[in-house]
Length: 235
Image (tube, rainbow, N blue to C red; front, top):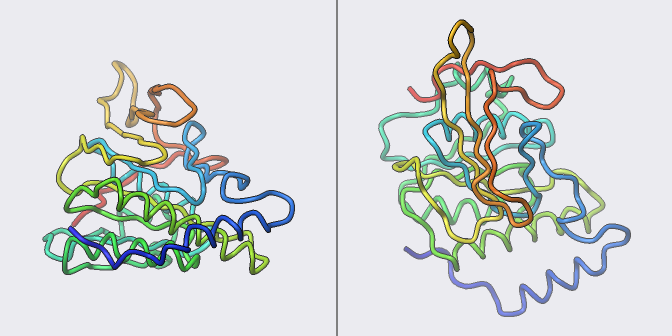
C-alpha cells in the first residue's frame, strides 16, 4: 500500500530547525497532552492507537474532548456498509455536527487523508479507521505530519489546535500498529453483582515511558465532566 510520494529530503531538517527556533517551550512534547480520561492522556504531534471491542467508543470519546479545541476529522473506508450514528456520537461529543466525516474510496486514501489533515494543522484530532495495517515507514510519516502541524501553528503564534492522530482497525479488535506513541484498548464489562450501570476496562497496552496497566471503571468519565453512557455508535 502506497501513500503520496516521499517528502523532499530536507523536510525533516526544516521541521527540526523550525522547532528549535520556537521561543519558550519547544516542540510538541512541551504542549499539555489531550486528557481523554483521567487515566488516559495523548501527546500532541504524535500518532496513537485504540484497540479493543469498544475502540470506536474510545475514539469518539477522544473526539468529544478534542472538539473543544478545534475541528475533528474522521476518515473511514467508503465501502463499509455501516456509518457513524449521530445519536450515538451525541452522548460522547455533545455536538456531532462539529465532526468532519470523510468516506475514503480506497484503503490508501485513509492514510493519505490523515497525513494531509495532520500536516495542515487545522484539526485538533484526526481519526483514521484502517482497512489495512500501515508499515513502520507510513507510521513515521504520520508522526512527522502531526509534528509539522503543531510547528506550523506555533510559528504562526497559535497554540491551538495542536493536532494528534488516532488510528483503529476496522476489522480486528486486537490490532497492533507498529511505531505508535501509545496504544489503548477499551472493553465493555458486565455489571457487578448487585450494582447497576455499565462497566468498562481501560487498558494501557503501550506507552514509551509508562508500564502496561488497566483500570475498571463504572461508566466513562471525561475529565471534569459527568458520566457518559454512549449509545450505539454505528448504524
